[in-house]
Length: 218
Ligand SMILES: Nc1ncnc2c1ncn2[C@@H]1O[C@H](COP(=O)(O)OP(=O)(O)OP(=O)(O)O)[C@@H](O)[C@H]1O
Ligand SMILES: [Mg+2]
Image (cartoon, rainbow, N blue to C red; front, side, top):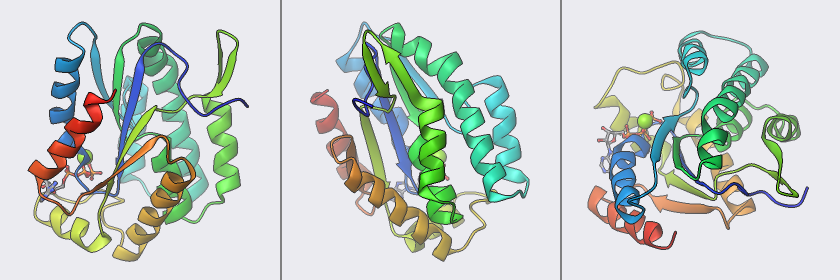
């Protein structure tokens, strides 16, 4: 394995963070800024689980039906395989910019951190689904930039409570989300070239300012 990057000509960016951390709030802003910075490129907004017709069906099942933790992990990666092969890879090959609301870091955060599955098992799934060869480069396909919206589980719960009815994950307790958050932070430390950690307790304008500065460096 040579590297954990994206060797395709397109740009791949992911948004991560616990439920209620602010991903959806900031994606429209960032996609607009990116489109302004790269006016001739196509900017594609997508999400996980989902992003394809089959993936969206799996999303409904994943967010609503109780299931064994391993089943959950396998369905997340099944949705991801579909997403990569049908949407993300063709777009990256065509030099597009792909912005995904969640990607593999979510699987580690929720299924390992939250549900307690082994990191080594998820590493195997990650390799199976994301290893690629392109122009003599052998690599693990990852976003080149991941924004981690970091927020305490308590504040995230307050924000969710005032804005929506909870799905299967959002009904889980603060303790669950603390574990999810810690696994996100572990991944970010392990791969600090790729991650930008955003302190989501700040106000929206301050965060937008920070996001914009990162986009200008792309
Ligand atoms: N910086 C902020 N300050 C105050 N409120 C915020 C901030 N960012 C987001 N919010 C509010 O918090 C709520 C949750 O945000 P959002 O839906 O963007 O989270 P999310 O990360 O997309 O969650 P999910 O993973 O469940 O989709 C929304 O009501 C949003 O308006
Ligand atoms: Mg969201």
